[in-house]
Image 1 (cartoon, one colour):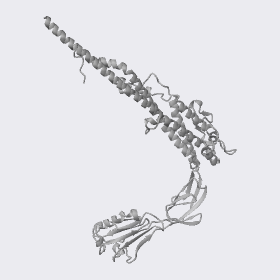
Image 2 (tube, helix red, strand yellow):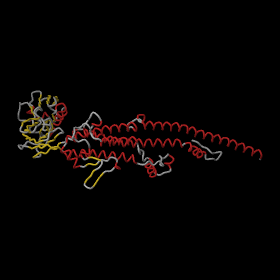
Image 3 (cartoon, rainbow, N blue to C red):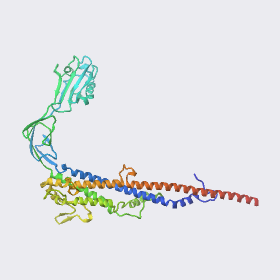
Image 4 (cartoon, rainbow, N blue to C red):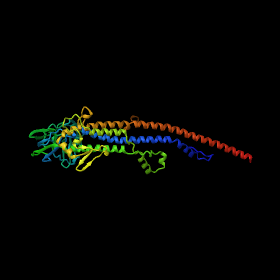
Length: 496
């Protein structure tokens, strides 16, 4: 806490503040440079996230499954659902569901309880404490059964071991019965219950079959595929790379037609082109945005004199054009455009080699309307009619045009090239601007920001020392003035 100006009457704090303001100009400039570096870093990272999205889309386009989607129709519907995979052969098939797969299950007879689930196992007829072995598809477990155990507690004890056995039980008070179930279908799935001791579990559960061990198995699904019989342990099964889910037993034969899903492939390519167009729009927007150099980042002193709305408007102008004419982005966009326009080498003669041959180019003629121009800097247009025809007539060639992984870059497919180019650009920007988790020492702009921070820290220390020196000088002046005032007062007293 400083108190000054008592002897001189001078506003020392204001004088020193004005003296220091001139000395603070270098640190303000460093702060502005640091802010510009951070804005540039943030703009790079925003674009790099979009480049990463595009790279991931290009990776999906490298996969052959993106071009081999199959469409399935069934007649009649509702009996079985059918799904084809990329490797499913096109053609017509038949299937008939003779039996559905079933999980093993059984239920007790009516327990004749008097107090619902609160009745004890002893009330049902258990004469002494014993154990129950439960054997299911997953394995076996043994639980304690006591005469004082309630029905609900008995059911809970079975369910507590279901992770080991695969068997679960439930009690319904309305029906007054216990239901036992397994989650796994098929003949290999079973439920077996063995009660130790003299008591008969059938008598306790009132099943009506005393002396017979309680053991049930599931049933397989029985089908006729193209008139060939087959059995499966689940109602979902695969035949000839076709996945079936049987819904109901039926005497009706279901006709299945598997065809190439042209519309799905067209949509996949259209979505990919849309992602590319979105990316170049964002990058070109940054490259073409003018830098408002007369608007520099605000200093703390400037902020204090402005409203929040004024600060926002100023900073929107100040951070515009951070990546204007950026060479890294310009070079990256050029490589992407070349990857799209260059023909794919190494493919057999007469095969599709360019995007233009399947209706994708920087211009599109639709009747008397021409879309696309040089000013759009590489935006792609699709002639959907031509694209659909190419996929219908030459699906393998369209797939090869995108997915080929050649020995050289010139023989790589379009998607393969774009993935490699986008990966390279992503890596270059990451080296320059890092990612949100990056340490400043691991990327170029981070190192620059640290260098400016260090300079600001050293300069701040020097300014603090200078400010203290000013205060000491003014304090010394105040002391001398105070001493002189004292001497003057003494002399005046002597002369009087």
